[in-house]
Image 1 (cartoon, rainbow, N blue to C red):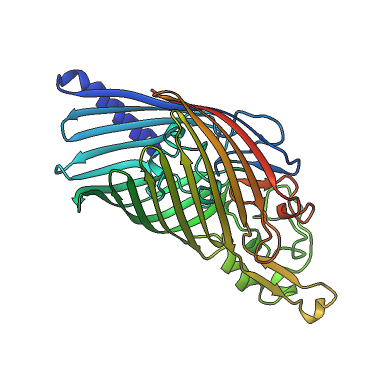
Image 2 (image 1 turned 120 degrees about the vertical axis):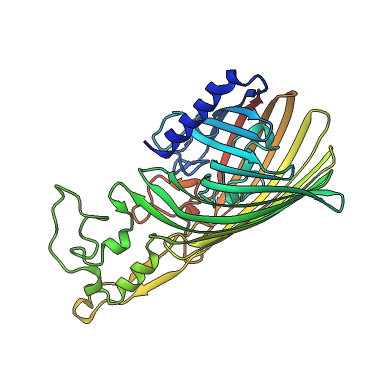
Length: 434
C-alpha cells in the first residue's frame, strides 16, 4: 500500500470516530476554477504546471487552469486536526483524476507551536499555500516565469509552525523536511530524495514579507530508471547513432564506438550533466502591500543546481488598483538561466567529425501581463488576462522551454522558441470558493 493510501485510511478512520466525540468538529470546504485559454502560436504548447501531460495550443481549451479541490478537516480534540484535500486538475495522465494534495495530522503543542506530519504544500513561495486556490490570487495565475521555475508541489514529511508577535507585526517560522515524488509529462518523475528548508513570514495590517530557503537533492527518472540521454551515450553504439536512453527490448543495436571514444572527455561532461541525486537548492524572497485599494506584490526566486537542469533566477512585479469590485492589474516578470556549454573536439581517428556541443537547459523568458478581476460575489470572481510571453535567446542560443512553454517540434528538427517571437495568451476564468 502506498503512502497516499495509508494517509487516506488514517484520515477516514479519524472521520469515522467523529460520532464518538460530541465535541468533535468536522468541516468540508472547497474551491475551483473554470478556465478557458488559448494562444496564437502554431509552434508551441503552453502548460501552466509541470505535471500536465500537454498544454493548450492555438485552439481554445479548458484544461490548463481548470481545477476543483475539496478539503475535509476533522478536529477530535481542541489541539488535534486531521486534514485531507483532494485536487482535480489536468495531470500527467492527460485526465482530471483526483489526487491527494494534502493529507496530514496537526498537533498544537502550545498556543504558539503546531507540529504536522503527512503531505503538505512545499512552503517556498508567497502563493504556495493557495497556489491552486485561484480565487485567492489577484490575477489569473501566479506568474509562470517564477512559479514555473520550481517543480515543487508537496512534501511528504514533517514540519513545525511557530507563530508570534514582533514589533506590532505577526510572524511565522516554519522549518520542514521530507521528500516527494512528482509525476510530470511524458512518464517522467522528479524525485526529491531529501528536502529540508525553512521559511519566515512577517505580516502587518497592510504589508507582508516572506523569505525561504531549501536544501535538497533530486533525480529525473522515467520508466527505465534515471533518465539521462548524455550519460547513456558514453558507450552507446555510434555515439548518438543508437537509441537514446537505456537499452530497450526489441530495439536493434547499431555497431560503432561510444561517445567517449569519439569525443575524449565526454564521460566527465555527461556525469556532470546527469540528473541523479544532484543539488536542487532554492532561495526565495517576496513582499506585498495592500491597503484595500492599491495592491503591490513582488517576488524573487533563485534555483541552484548542478546538472542538466541549469541554475536560474526569476522575478516578477505586479500592481493593481481596486475600483469598487473591479481590480485592473499589470505584471512584469523575467526568468534567466545560467546555462553551461561544453564543446568537445573529436579524437584524431575521427577528425572528420564536427565538434560536439553539450549544454544544460536554456529557458530564458520574459512576459508582460494585463488583466481585470471582477468580484461578482464574496466567493466568486471573474477574471480576464492577456499575456505577452517572449522566449529570449539564452546564454548560448535559443530557448527550449521554461517549464510552461514548449516547442511542438524542438531543435534540431525545429527552431528554438526564441526564433518564433512573442506568444500572445488570452485567458478567461471563473474562480469560486465554498
